[in-house]
Amino acid sequence: MLSVEPIKAFTDNYIWLVSTNEGSIVIDPGESKNIQKLIDSKTIDLKGILITHHHYDHTNGLSELVKKK
Image (tube, rainbow, N blue to C red; front, top):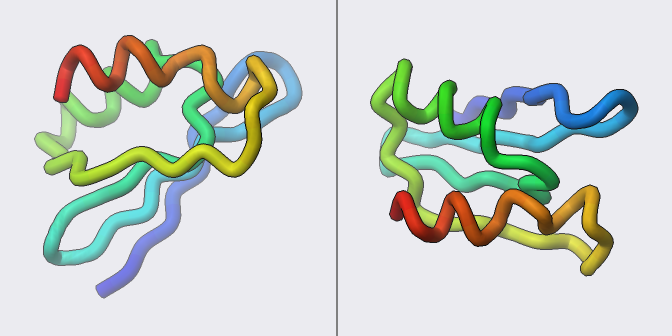
């Protein structure tokens, strides 16, 4: 099953969590705090991170998420 979950970021943006039975990917993690809380609370198996383009509001959370991986 495929699920796509929006995660609020900043005041006007979203991070996307895409999950299947095999694991999850995060798309455009502009910040890491909210996505990390969600990953920890739901014991999500993060398999990858997709960046659509290089703007701070899409990439700032990348380094923190990679450290947790």
